[in-house]
Length: 379
Image (tube, rainbow, N blue to C red; front, top):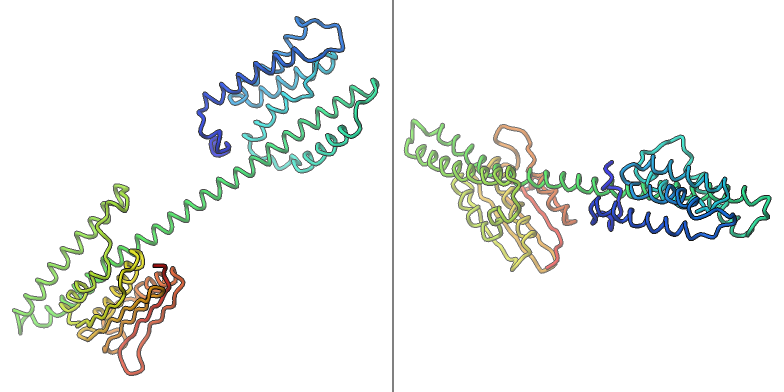
């Protein structure tokens, strides 16, 4: 996992160079603070200065070499403790260890929860017990220093896991968005292609059957095939061009709406399906209007594919809270053309379920086929 994914949101705004600069400034100030710590020995500042520098200044490059910096600072702090010099309670080493815990991969054999719990108990116990006598002072300082290191390690691992979980969640959301976008593209490609190809298939069949007996009718069918195929090809090229170049929705042609249902009915008539339209919706939100158009388009396409020639009745009503779509035909109520089941009904059902609506489709008792969809929307 990259270091940038494990930074806090505030630190992500800063470049790596600026972060190192902040560490360098803090390291210099920390070195001066160590020189000002009270000393129980007669050691001079000249003797203390090298150890103070070794304890503080390496922290300036902790982001470049986390583990070596931690080892150097820990060693310098241990020496000051052994010599009885001004000691920083392993604070500098804990500061370096925190970054080690943040950046290094997980080690299952390290009992981080246990380390954190024991460290917390020791720190709280030391605060309650207060200063120890001189004989136990060294052991108390050492134990407290180790507890500070343990607490720093545990805190670093907790922060790392939390940020890793956040990064994983972000990736999952991104993957889900990609999957949703792929599904949307599949739907749009299906909607663009299915209607036109169904019309072409029907007209091609007509042309084959009447080519010898009625050549003029066959010629008319071929003209419809030519016009429809050109339009469908242009739509597909435009859509695939947007996908290839990574264009946004602004690059797409305007989404079809209810006003385009008339053109849909005219194209269906070319394939021998007379569509009786009744639309009473008023103004609908763009997404709702697009979904309603696609459902009607798919339903009429199914009539063209499976029932032509036939009559089709489309009723679309909205009352400001709910849209209802009914598409019925007087065809045989079953497939009459060869081919697979396709994804038309599935696509319609998915669009309706996206709004939490109801969808039914099937043969009518008195003949023909019926598609019914109803879903709520916010004006």
